[in-house]
Image (cartoon, rainbow, N blue to C red; front, side, top):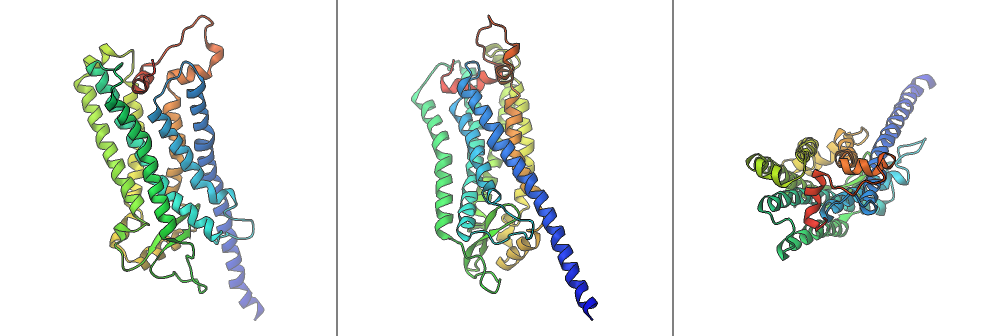
Length: 352
């Protein structure tokens, strides 16, 4: 009698231990990706830009790197305090912390999308200025464009974060473990908290759950369209740009393609995520889908976690950055130089 009742209990314990081991491994990978890319490598790149006399980048690019640094911290908040422990998955973190992180996640998603769009706009503006021969021109229009590209992303970040914190609910579940009705639930996921819609009175497309994702999706699509336009612009003005720019500056195009491919995958994952499709799903279906998959690492989460590393690898591999790090290979009588790529990236800030 005891054996028959003990068997399912033992199976439950074994299954839980398996979940815990998988969760811990996934947490380690996710946190390692976030910290390595966003909190170690990107700060190294930023410090290189600030302190090296041979590396010049405009403020829009610096802002872009800072946004991914902030994003990595936000996505790591729950893991910093211990997402799980050796005995359980700890799926009930502090309610206020969960709401705070969910609100910040809602803010950093459109923030990084805005700053990514910003460097694309900046690159197009730079190439256009090179073609027109107005690189040295510091007009009010160009300064205003730079100011807008610096401020607007953080305005969007604050709006989404504050609205999510005010309208979101820290009480995700009732005492019976059922979703609270007609609320924007702050729910702990595999690696971080997020807000899910649990209201039949609001359209899913306009909810706190899906609005940041949909806006990010639209901004990334716009960014890809502008990048395609940049490719056409470069091909049409290749001779002129070759004459007015230093050497193989076309490597910038390769870097754009690399980022575009990575973001295209992210866009595809966003488009197929439950949050984006919530407009055609009932609140209960969305919640159940989220809960049923929250014990398994989501590929889209890992893709998102690799974004800071991809940003670092793409932009830290530029010649002037590598030369700044390989100081032992520098000739004593060498003069400061600006790479062809950084020339385009730095000109709008007025850097020589």
